[in-house]
Length: 294
Image 1 (cartoon, one colour):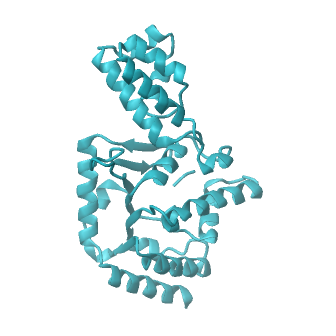
Image 2 (tube, one colour):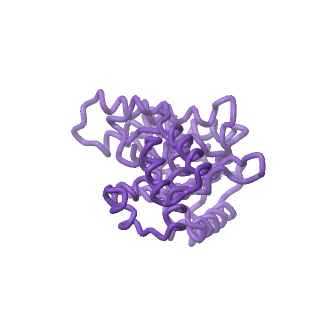
Image 3 (tube, helix red, strand yellow):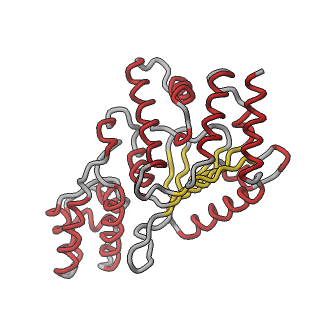
C-alpha cells in the first residue's frame, strides 16, 4: 500500500454522514448547499466524506442552513471538536500520500481486518528490509533519509497488532506467488517468510495461503482488498459501518455501500474457504523458506 495526515478519521466520517443526512432531509443538493453556505461544492463533498476536520462554527452554520434542531446542532458541534484530534502519524504528514491518512485512521479504529493480497506481503506484516525494497522501487530518486522515514511509518503501523488493549483481529490470505517472489533477494525474503510464520502464531491473527492449485477463485476478479469492521457500542451497533479499501496504482478507493460490502465479503469468504488451513499454510511458508535458503 502507498503511504495526508490530519484529524481523527472516525469522528470525521461520523460527522460527515450526519451532515449529509441533514442536507438530504432538507432537500438541498450539494450545489444548493454550497451556494447557501458560500462554499465550493468540493468543500461540501470533502466534509460529507470525512476528508477534513471541521470547526464548530462551520458545523453550526451548516445546521442552521439545513434547519437542524438545537439539540442536534449542539451534538454535532461537540463531535466537530473530536475531528481535530491528532493521530500518531501526524509527524509523518510530509511523506504520506494524499488519502492514506484516512486509511491509517480507519485501521487504528477497527476491530477486525480481512485482507487479501495477490502479489506482495501486506504492510502490516513486512520486515524492514522487505518494506525498504518496495518503497525504494516505488520512489525512485527519493533521498535515503525520506526512504528511511517511509519505512519507519510502515513499521510503526505494525504495533496495531500487538497493542495491549483492543488489538484488532486479522484474517489474511496471501496468494502463493507472494511466497515465491524473492523481493529484495533470497536472504531478505527468507527473513520475511520467517516473520510471516511468527505473525501467523499470534492469537489475534489467522493467516492462510491460497495455493496455485486452486485455479479460479474470486480474488482473480477482485484483486487485493481489505475489509475493515469496527467495534460495537453498548447497544450492539457498530460505531462505524464496514469499509472496503482498495489500493490502486494511481489512487485508492473507500467503499461503504451495503451492496459493495456484501460483494467483497462474499469474495473474501470464497478466497478464505479455497485456501489452505492455518497449519498447512505455515507448512507452505516453511517450504518456501527452504527454497529461498538453497
